[in-house]
Image (cartoon, rainbow, N blue to C red; front, side, top):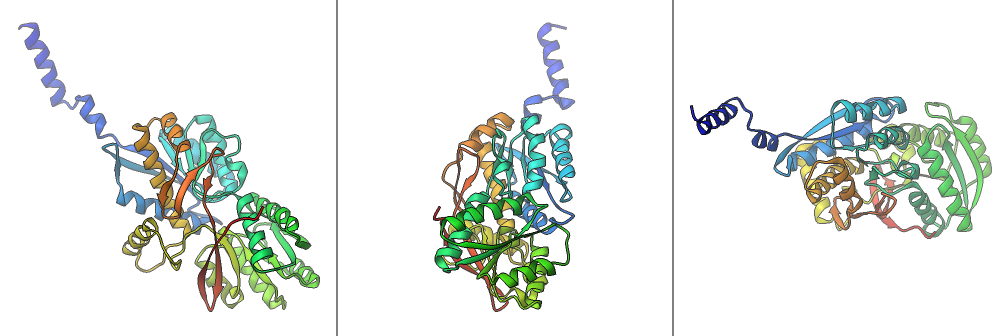
Length: 381
C-alpha cells in the first residue's frame, strides 16, 4: 500500500474512533464553579443566589460556541468548608472561573485558595473590603462595606435628621464588624453621636441585656447589620421590651423571611441594599428582563436582590469570557479587571481598580407588611 493510502486509512480510522480532536474539543464544556452556602446559617441567601445563576445560565447556556457547565458546591455557611469547596473546584473539577460567595467570612476563606490556584472568582454579595484587598484573582459584583456603611450613616443623619445612634454588632461576623466600624466613622464625622456600642455573637437567641441598655440610652435609631434570621429576632425582642427607636440594617437583611420571622416588629425597619427591588420605579431594561425571566421560572415567589446578584455574576463572567475569547483563567482574570459600563439587572456596572463593583446604594423600608423601595443614596463622605 502506498504511503498516501496508509495516511488516508489512518485518518479515516481516527474519525471513526472519535479522535477528530478539533471537533471534539469545540464541544467541550466551559466549566464555571459556584460555591455558595446552600445549607447552614446563610442558606436562604445562598439558595437565592444559586437560583439567579441558574436562571442566567438558562438564558445563555453557551459561550464561544461551547456549552457552559455549572459545578455547584455547598460551602455549608462554614469558613473551612468554603476553603474546601474552592480547593475542590480548582484542583478536582478544573473550573475556569468561580462564582461566589454570599458572606464575607466565607469569601475570605475561599479567596485565599483561589489566589494560590490562580483561578478568578466573582463574588456575589461579600461586601467586606478585605475580600478583594491585595488580591489578583478575586472580584465582586457588589459594593463594599465602607461605601454601604457611609451610605447608611448619610441617610440617617441627613435624610432622617437623626442625632443619636446605638450600634449592635455581631462580633463573630466579619461582615457585621466591618459595617459597624465604617458606619460609626461616617456617622460621627457627619455630626452624629453614638450613645451605645454593644455586641453579641452569631447564634445568640437572647438579646435582652443589650436591648435594655440601648433603651436606657434613648437613641433615635439602632444600626444593626445582622443576618436576617437574628435581625428579625432582635427586632421582635426590642419591641417586646418597649423599644420605640427606628432600627436600621444592611443588605444581609434583604430577605423575604425578615418579614415572616419578625412580623409586626418589622414595621418601620430600614435597610440599605443593592439597587434592585421588584417594587422599584423606573426599572431599567436589564432589571425588567431579569424580573420577567424570574417570574416565568418561579411564579410563586418574587425575586430579590440576592437572586439578581447571582444572575449578574453569571452574565459578568460570560461577558469576560467572550471578551477574552478563551476559557483560560488568566485571560478571564484580565477581562474581568477591564469590565466597564456593563448593563446589568442592578444598573450599569464597572469593576474598579480594587476589583469592586461601582453601584449606588438602595434604601428599603417595611410599611404595612410590605417592602417599599424608597430610592438610592450616595454617601456624603
